Amino acid sequence: MSTILLVDDRAENIRALDAVLEPLGHRTVTAGSGEEALTRLLKEDIALILLDVMMPEMDGFETAELIKQRDKTRDI
Image (cartoon, rainbow, N blue to C red):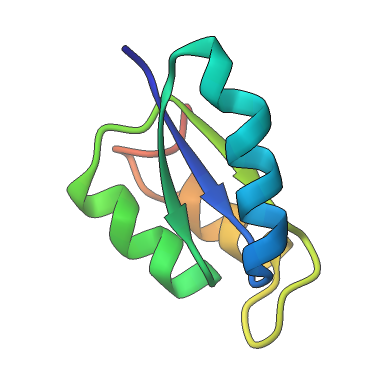
């Protein structure tokens, strides 16, 4: 079973994505910020990231750039 990381600062968006993905049988984990997403990536084996680009503090583009800099996560 693949794990999908859902990253969004709005809980209602995460709930909607989770509802759409649930019937597909994938495990989902969530993060409410870019920083939280980076922490999750250190602890979880993630196959796919659905990342909001418009978040406060660290936006999705900055988060994606940091994800690509790490050997462990660059190919997600």
